[in-house]
Amino acid sequence: MRFSQVRRGLPLILGGFFIFFWVGSFFAPWPFMRWPQKIQHLFVEAGTWVFQRTQWWSKASIITPEELATLEAQRDAYAVGYAQNLLLEEENTQLRELLNFLDRQPYEYVTGSVISRAIASTSTSFVIDRGSVDGLYTGAPVITGQGVYIGKIIALTPTTATVSPLTNTTSATAVSLLNETQTIGIAQGEGNQVVMIRYIPQNEQVEAQEMVVTSGLESSVPSGLFVGIVTEVKGETSAPFQEAIVEPWVDARTIRFVSVLLLKEGI
Image 1 (tube, rainbow, N blue to C red):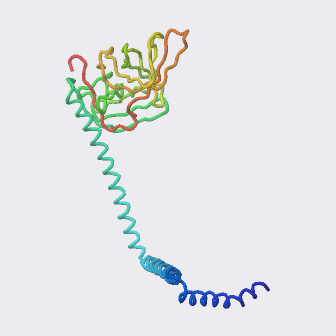
Image 2: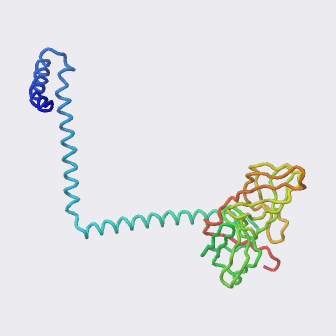
Image 3: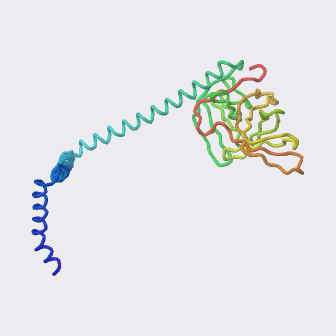
């Protein structure tokens, strides 16, 4: 009942609004006269939007399945090309940094590419495309970037070498902290991209954020190769030694180029 009353009164309401605006246009100032123009502008914009959407859907509806397949193939080709360009840019950056560092060093070296990986929570290794015929030997240090130490060669074939990163639980490397006393210790892998420096004397002052490098106390690993950053120091005051947790500077799971330093006598 109420709805029918409102419906019958709707023409009277609309008519009242029309008369109100028409009379106001004679007696009201300029801003009042702009209201009909604003309402007209809103209707024009709404009509334009509907027309544009109708045209878009009309064009989309006439694309054939063959044309759609062509467009999808072009999209896929562009995406693959873009991904390949990003990968090449990253590879070029890694290789350029590596060669810039090696040009300033007295070491002989062999540069290789990573061709396969074996990744687990406690043990990670990768294989490079250089082997014993290239002069490599087990225990040789492997670096990347601007002299960042990665690990050592643990196995060889004539044409390939397997590298064990310093984060492996079976890896151990003599290191030094770049602090006032040049604290030395043994960096052992803990898995999950973590390294622990053990056997640090309790009287040594070791703090977080200190840099860690190779100490040179191993015959096959030179000193000064960057290892990582101390993130935490642990140890009881009653214990003879303390320990430092180190985050490696480079994730060995992501590198694509490495160099093997040849320091063994006769190489």
